[in-house]
Image 1 (cartoon, rainbow, N blue to C red):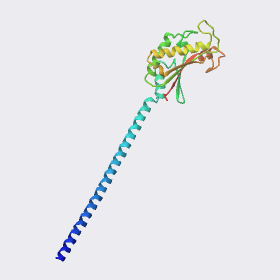
Image 2 (image 1 turned 180 degrees about the horizontal axis):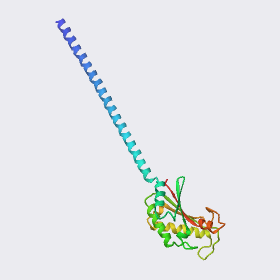
Image 3 (image 1 turned 90 degrees about the vertical axis):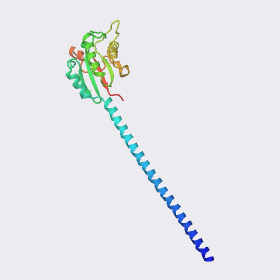
Image 4 (image 1 turned 180 degrees about the vertical axis):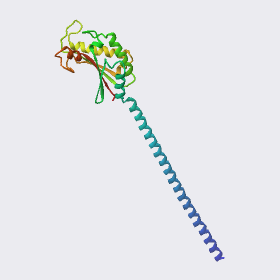
Length: 213
C-alpha cells in the first residue's frame, strides 16, 4: 500500500510539472505572437507614414509648380504677340519688368487711357490672368515740370497714371489683391533727360511681376 501511494504521488507530481511546463510554453508563445503583431503594426505604421510624407511632398511640388512663374514662357509669349513693339520685357533676378511708353498708354499730360493703351492692357491682362504673379504698377515721368489744375506736379501725374492702369487691369479680371500702384515722378529715369528722345523713354509705366511668397 505504501509503495502504491508513493507511485501515485510521483505520478501526480509529474502531471503537475507537465502542466506547469505547458502553461509556461503557452505564455511564451503568446508573448512571441504579441511581439510579432506589434512589429507588424509598427512596420505598417512606418509604411503609412512614408506614403503620407511622399504624398505631401508631391503635393507641395505640384503647388510650387503651379505658383512658380515660368518666366521664359511668358517672355516668349510677349515677344511672339502683337505687344513686342509696344512693350519692353526684361527678366531681372526673380522678377519680370514690363515697360510701356506713355505715348502708347495715355493722352499727353494726362492719366486717361487712350484707345491704344486699352488695347495693350487688354492683351496683357489675358496673359497675366493665367499666372499668379503679384503686380506692382509704377508710374514714371521725365524731369519737365508740370502744373495744371488737375496735376500739380509730376508726382500727381505719375501716381494717377499708375492708378489708372491698376484700375483698368482690375476691370479686366485681375484680382485687386495681386495689384499695387506707386508713382515715382522723375526720380527713377532709365536714361538721360537731356533731349526729347531720352525724356520720351523716361515717361513710362512699368509692371513689376513677382512670384507670390
